[in-house]
Length: 505
Image (cartoon, rainbow, N blue to C red; front, side, top):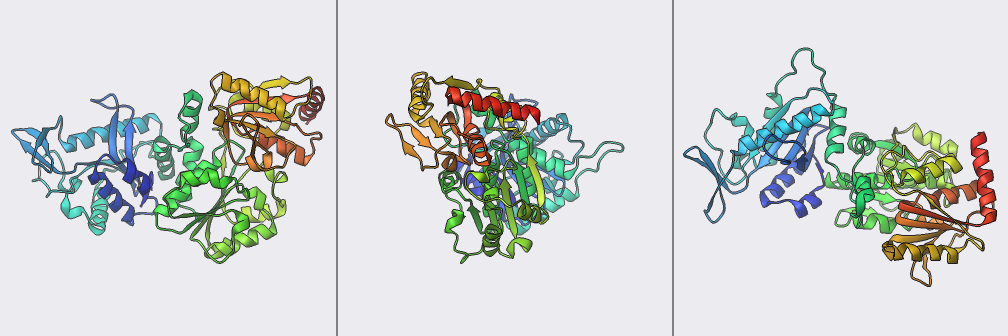
């Protein structure tokens, strides 16, 4: 069964050892094809609490099963429920474990009904892994209280089947929730995109939430052997890829993430740390090892006959019969670093299910509008983040790295952290370096696929041919919070010509 988040994260964040043991069992359970378990689900509306929480929410054969886990012992004495720890100390509970599970189930059902998903069967289960099942009572069915005897893969599988098999049928005339809608909505409600060291400010917080589109892709990844995900810069392709890879590794499959730009090693490394996932730049693939699942980021760079042949060699079962996921930008950044063959892309598209990410989760509205106006590129609906306007810095002299560095110093003086400010020199092709004042100076080739909170763009193209357009596109779509463009009078004329061309299309 798929776990969200994966087992490695649950082992770190779970509040109790009992939850960790249940998580290990859930991962080992071989349930229905669409089975998925969400851990530590926060419920925004609850009958008796400002915010409730469910230990696990499991989607099993179209039935939503909410699980409350209670480690140690529990006992009912004179009508009052108590938990008993390993020292034998009693602690009074406000409600019975089953009441707690059921109230959370009702809260979850209300939330999803508010979201308009339709009617679905929901059941509440209590798991007490350390004790025998309590005597039967009118408050619950015996099938809905799992104890020591259910703490094996076979017994828990049977328990799920018994609960799901006995779930209520839909009332006459109601609209029933589609399984794929329910699955995608659960992913969207309870999945968060982990962004390393980026928990500051309203803009960043908005960008960290999984969008409906991202949730739809995450929900589909485990069910389909081959997928192509299209999305412009900033739509969250790489984050979804990392989460999908963690899910596959959690299922016990061998996983490879590959890409053209070596700089992406630093992006993916922290996000998959501790998982059994190989992270290998495309140029370093030898073809000696095959993988159960292969993920390709920035796949437009490799969309050519040679690239596809190399991928075919590392996918167990080959590209035609194996399990793979390719994430690519339809705006074609391959003019910066890579080779894109549209005929090859058309052939590959016929081999896989296709999805689109159409909401920009990186760039502010102002940045998205600049890209749309000047480049005519589709980088998603700019509806998620408002943010500051794009700052155009018109330079009397050269609009070079020195001019950009002056802007970067102003940003730091106004509270930005030096490490969060990048200078992107559009006309360069050089590897990243440090400026005299310690700012990262990089080029579109090495910035592609990455992001920074504050970006200062300089050295604009002398000509907006395919390469110049692609380089400018990459540079201005890296910023998460603020974008500053340093330009000369000559740059301004070229940009005005570019804008006129777009308006005339």
